[in-house]
Image (cartoon, rainbow, N blue to C red; front, side, top):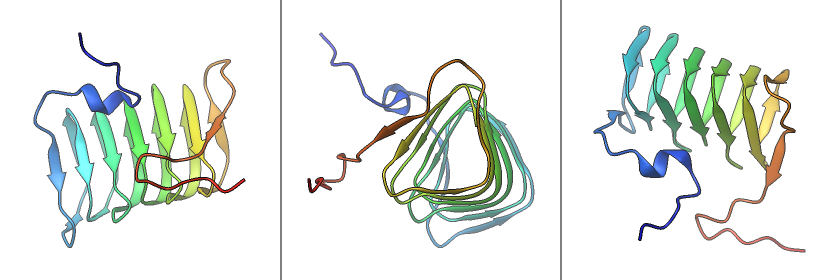
Length: 135
């Protein structure tokens, strides 16, 4: 019996496209499937799939994706058709739009947040990397 995953990207089985740490990609990106960004992207993105922007990753431009988990920096804006999870290390400067939004305490969003469904913005404390909350 399989255990249900908390994050929607945990169940992805296809090989993702990687932009590794210490790499810089200049230009627009269009593609399908999962994208994992640990380096820098300078350009717009049209992703027919999921974006996983790691804490070391940064994206300078407008990004459109099906789903996204953001732990790094976006300078431009982010439009997500489905679920968006913003980690506590994330910094987003620009408009954010998604069907559902979950934001970790500590994340910085400098811009408008638009939720395209009736769901409220969820707040959570990140626990995956061993960070514990102090009450």
